[in-house]
Length: 555
Image (cartoon, rainbow, N blue to C red; front, side, top):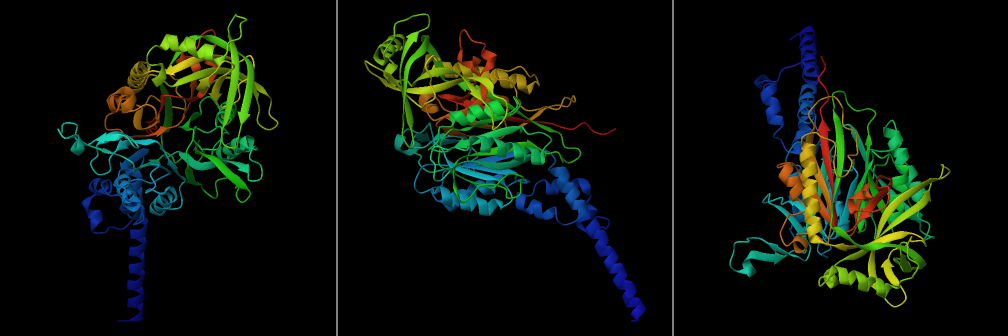
């Protein structure tokens, strides 16, 4: 063979290779046609799908066509082995094409499931390029990774495996171990974890303004504004999250959703290069927020993701409206409480805690000792961030009642001032059931693409006439609810499951449900309800519903 012939064949080989790499050539599997190849790619698990996208330009185009819409995937495992549980949930959520943009892992408080170990295992499985939050919850809501059965599971509660079985010992077990994994793919959004911190040497100096500015800086770095589409907040055990939520409510646009869990043990991983400051050696993390920001460089042809928040309240108001008279606060390192006396509105007699509780007990009746009792305090306070203009904000804050004596009413938490008005609220399953029905009605209207709801929609929906699709939902439900509260299973999940069957739904049982909405849901009297916000709830369920409006096709 001559040198000229060898060079000619080498040029032909290089050309064929370049054509294949650029999608211009034809391989054996390409001969089956694009439609059939796309169908095959759509059935691949996530890791294999990611590899297929790297085969050639034409395959990458097909993969982008397969995964052009947002997706939420979730699963839980009750396997007591951390490694086994993580493998089960990861295999399930990655059993279909998916490019994770964020992940949330909920872990039980049982000692066999170490939070740090679970966090490390999930990080290894999902990679180092996405934000991940792992935290301990009071229970999980979702589908079993093995059986695909939907359940609301509360730790240390009895879980019915076969309600029809005659032998209770065979039909139920006490659940102490479990993991829920939620993974989301949100094209058109950027997601990162932003920590809330304090200096190690100063326990009282919570850097709330810096936290707000970090969220704004990240949002401005990836978006065209400083207020994100949404914030999912996870608080720690050593912080009062109420002032933080009030500051977020002040600082963020009304279109920004705010949901989450008030308190728990958590770990997180954030993106390193995301446009926000990195606070490390001299700071202790007290909470973390997953921030969802609109991407200014959203790929062409991608539609609009919308977020919709609804609330099912399990608190019912009772008794008259009071005004705080004398107020004392007691603080320690990890907790705080308030002692107060009060007078009824338009009355002058000052009432002690024992008198107030006796009157409320008479109204509630025989179930008083089994009832969760709170006061809902309307607070009007000044807020600002750094040197911004001060603005008055009215909010409704719930404080659990501890006890009362002949001098004071004792409640948990701080921030109550003389002159603040408040009302008693008690936990009531009938109120909660009725509220769940209202949420279900709202979801029916949402399904019909109507925008009038019990809690105003937040987030932007593209007003282009395209059909809105619901692609996922997340629930934050009070640990006091669930089957023991309603005396039947899956009540909190039912509004979503009834209206969006087959759509992924996941959730957690919390000790304090975060959800930004109007106080009108609590039947506040004598106030401009639309101006009074409530971000932290009790005996409630907060629903975050995610929708997608496809982009209009080009003509």
